[in-house]
Length: 215
Image 1 (cartoon, one colour):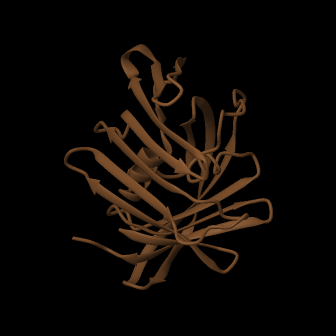
Image 2 (cartoon, helix red, strand yellow; image 1 turned 120 degrees about the vertical axis):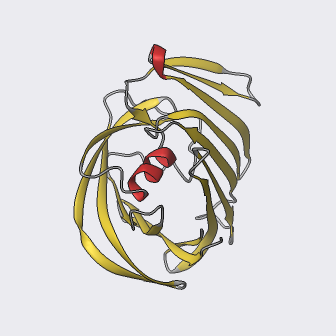
């Protein structure tokens, strides 16, 4: 699935999602279409493997944005309630406690788009800070895209955290979402497709608009 990320009326980045449901894997790539003071350069890749309950097993991020370069790998050891995160560039590594149902953002999106999640409170890991995400159902409607019209269910996500601390850098795709003032809407068909997404933090908003579905 290929998307264009739009903000302030501009197409600012491309974003692609590739999934292998049988293998429990998902890959996301995003790259700048324009670069300026408001929209710094970005060329990031995210890969996650997850189990049958959409609990992440390993989450890898290759971050190339503006002057920042890093490779971050997080291993989730659910039997021990533990996650281990390591950084290639800085050589830093940390371990932190996780609850029994903690997911990363993309494994949660996979669960929601497959119709395996709905309204409720979920825990998501954002750069070793655990966030509570309140998910509410906002209705069903037809979403018109460049590849056709899809009947999709809409969910609104709001975020809160009692453990959040400022990360060493901000991953502009995922961790920009995790803020008490962020509002996210995801429109999913229940068969693995995100038909549309929108994110807003304060007065700044962006959308993911579907452009192509690859076999």
